[in-house]
Length: 120
Image (cartoon, rainbow, N blue to C red):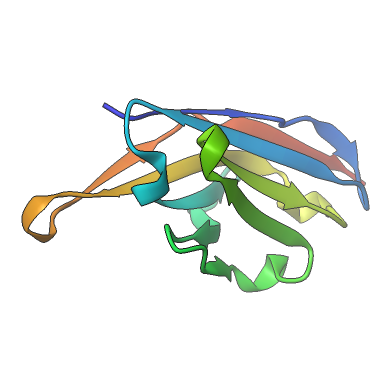
């Protein structure tokens, strides 16, 4: 069973920066595709960014150029560096892992989330 634990959420002023971390345990981290999602009150959950096991990154349009997702396989950790934060970035940020299984199956895992609040 894979366990994901996020940290780094905080209250920050608009224009500030935060780095979120997600540590994985219980599996083979380098094999996972990883992602960060967020959900604000009253809004749907959205994928903020992802990084594959091979290192390919993708980003949601509103965070391109401001957020960077990267991983350290030696530490079983994926990070989300968030710069130029805006009040609209306020949300609970959750870590997601997709583990490849046999016969093309995929298993997904979620962390509990960390709160990011951006004040104007």
